[in-house]
Length: 112
Length: 115
Image (cartoon, rainbow over all chains, first blue to last red; front, side):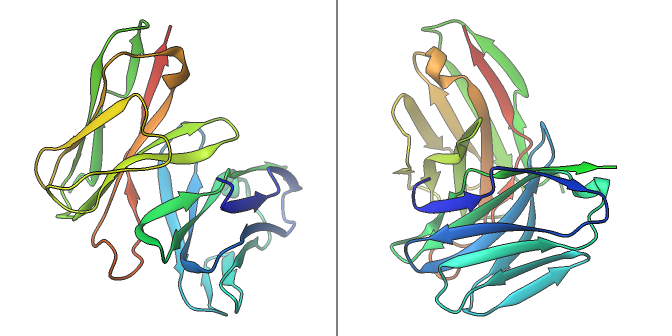
């Protein structure tokens, strides 16, 4: 979606290294969602951020939403093979709060 | 508690054929959604139903119709399939629409090929 830009499109990381995926909107977000998708499977919900400056962590994954609520980052510390997959950010906007618009996704590969 | 279920998992159609993709959720969610996923395009919203009895167009509704049969079920129909509709289709549901942001729960997907 042009409303939500996700970068990079793909990423190959050495096992044990850290990485960051970014998600940017030109409009203020109502809610920001991070999902993970394993190849050929459905989406698994990771985290939702709603407040400016909010940060959430789950195991080795941390997501942040900036104060202006227009940019989010997903950071993985000490990557493992289990982190491989496609990461998608999704956003709800005030004009259409019941819908989520998704970014194009980041394909993450972990090199042993 | 199965969550969101979709049938079929795979389908091959010839151009011009019709079919209905079925979706059901057992979480008593109000809102349901249909997306398609194409390489490099992420997920694009086709139609959604904010509550039982209502349906609205998403980003890419052309060539599709939907029916919110009841609170549990939301079907997607292709009346005359075209090769451009080859994609992976996902159904999703969420508890409440509009009042606050809630995550969506996704089904396993239907892989559709139109030849």
